[in-house]
Length: 395
Image (cartoon, rainbow, N blue to C red; front, side, top):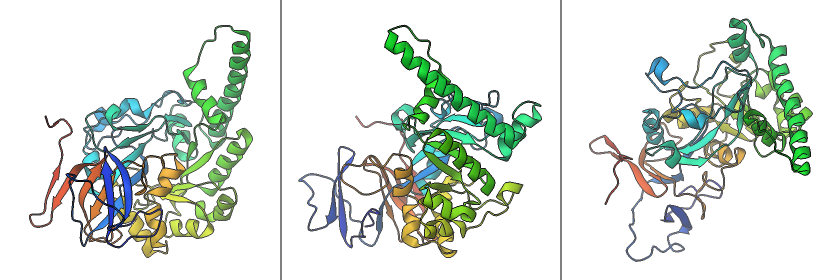
């Protein structure tokens, strides 16, 4: 058993009751109450469910074209009021793929077409509706620097069409949010009615450090701009993608800025990802940067999350760090470590039984539990996989 947040336990046991982990330890330390269901995982690896820290599962549905593409509302450069939560289709086949890859939780984000894309949300990867799957809303606010927003609005012949314009949109938004916060406080002190603004309310939460700022950025110069803006306004910065983060790894480590890195299997499809390489996670980790690995699903299928970590290990990432980058690190970076990310008493009963070391490409998830319920079972003898129907309720 690999709790991740502590040393592995040979022959360990994990006890789940009412959907929560209540005990973890050696077989001698954990005693199952009378009548509780027990599972013999001898010869298997037991780990917490993986956490996808940056994906678009459910908002960018696979194979649905225009009808299932709700990732970007590219009509307003400042979309802080937009919520990924409101666009998630729980029936997206990608959720099944997630379970197949041992991924039990996902942080779903708006896309990178806008300088400010909207609010992100954390969900479990099994359920009837997103409301039942919900872990936390909002988790952070998504923002984008670099090629994507300047291309989107440049094609519309409007601001922002350059990196200058993208940074200006973000800066203007925070200046307005600062003014809004002061007006709101002054009005409250006077006891007068105040007209709320959904966009400003969200940005004030970022300014107050209640929500981190997930900054889509690839190039080193854009990472520098992200840092500059965050220090100007004092918000918590999380670098997303960070393709050239290895070039400024010492700076990121010094400032304790985490990096959600990936996707790592893509071709070099645009200028700003030309330094994409599987060795980059290891460089960041050795420099002391806290990392999480992402598929950016559906850019890379979400069930390949662990395979990216495996090949990053091949290119120098420490194996223990690789497992942390899929579990406790993304949970901690995004403030979800009170619910998911490790086998720890008090956390949700999201547990995966693997046929072997998950970093071995030949290993597979045999049984997947979400909140203590078995939602995926793989029969090695027949090579058949069963996923529980969330619309079926016993009794």
